[in-house]
Image (cartoon, rainbow, N blue to C red; front, side, top):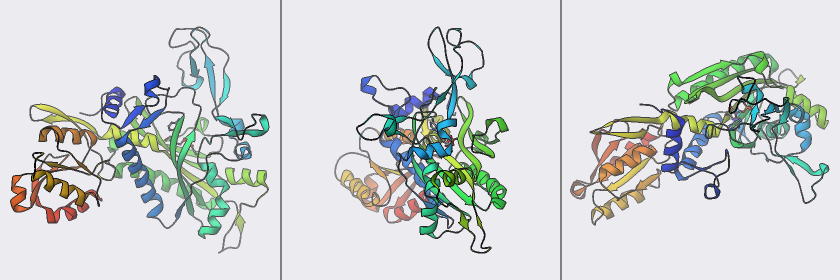
Amino acid sequence: MAVKDMQTIVSLAKRRGFIFQSSEIYGGINSCWDYGPYGVALKKNVKDAWWQDNVLRRQDMTGLDSSILMSPQIWQASGHLSNFSDPMVDCKKCKLRYREDTLESKTCPACGGEFTESRQFNLMFKTFMGPVEDDANIIYLRPETAQGIFVNFKNVQQTSRKKLPFGIAQIGKSFRNEITPGNFTFRTREFEQMEIEFFVNPEQADEFYEYWKNERFDWYKRFGIKPENLQLREHDNDELAHYARGCADVEYKFPFGFSELEGIANRTDFDLNKHMESSGRDLTYLDPQTNKKFIPYVIEPSAGADRATLAFLIDAYNEEPDGDENRVVLKFHPRLAPVKVAIFPLMKKPPLKEFAQKLNSDLIKRFVCEYDEVGSIGKRYRRQDEIGTPYCITVDFDSLEDNAVTIRNRDTMQQERINTSSLIEYLDKNLNI
Ligand code: GAP
């Protein structure tokens, strides 16, 4: 059985140390979340898988880590100061605030009250740079990592000596003062993005738009999301961001319905053009074959690390029979699982304990391992199932004689006996897929 509702995931995430409410001991802060020990490992694995597949294993990609605070002129040029806003209304009676474009009725869904006039609310967080709080020192927390890439286009292209088509990837925090955050980590005010700006000859823009839509859709399937829970949805013209000529969303079937996981947009030469105009710097590309200069077009696959982590968590969730009871098991792809191998001595007494600890210290050099000697083996399996550990290894009295251990597969619950000398090869083959 799959996830029934978001509350099931929120409870599991807290119980098992994936995600906690931020500032919990002070009553919590709305829409902010902290990743606990297994959550931080899961999210890091998601980001590593994305980086490995999109940057390290490709010749046409390179990376960047730009700063969160940037010149305010960037947001002026990119259009975010004037356009990056949502329509907002307040209920005159109960004072609740809504994003107007998400409302289905003309009165407050909570109390039936009348709304104020709609006004545009800019989503960028504003603060001051330095000790003086005046207009000259206003600075913004970036609402997307993308602009850090555009303003470094020339630096990266020249130092990496990449030729078109090529992409620049970045993972980092972004901030948006969302009017209505919610649905756990789906929409928050502080989140991490995994963005690619793929620079192409304008003539090839349509071809690469198609390519990246398919590539990014397949990536989620490759890491275990069930195909029936994914869809690719092309935006209508009235949904397009101010910079986009075309955009499609990879959507996931969250418990509250299909919603955006990642957007793939054709940003044309909008951003480079604006930054050329505004900075006075030349951001054109000289094609070495034709000797012609032009402003590249950009195809942008833009994903959220938190949203992807949430989708992987929800999709991995299963409740299924285990003997007379039910077990909760997270069937993560092995590359995403926070812990890869759990090692248990049958009893926490010597010499089984020493044998298992030695095995743990050998394996931990290669794989993320967890040693557990507390409770019955059944309870220990259940704990590991709930955090999605692909393999559990038990050391028993026979191990002392034959140097073999029992390895149990998380998904099939099948157990097999393996000599410790073959363990690394076995785990390598099954985990690094
Ligand atoms: N540079 C393009 C851009 O930022 P976007 O569709 O606004 O496009 C891209 O954002 C991705 O960032 C989204 O698909 C989503 O995964 C993530 N994202 C955006 N706003 C978010 C929020 N408030 N909370 C969590 N993730 C968010």
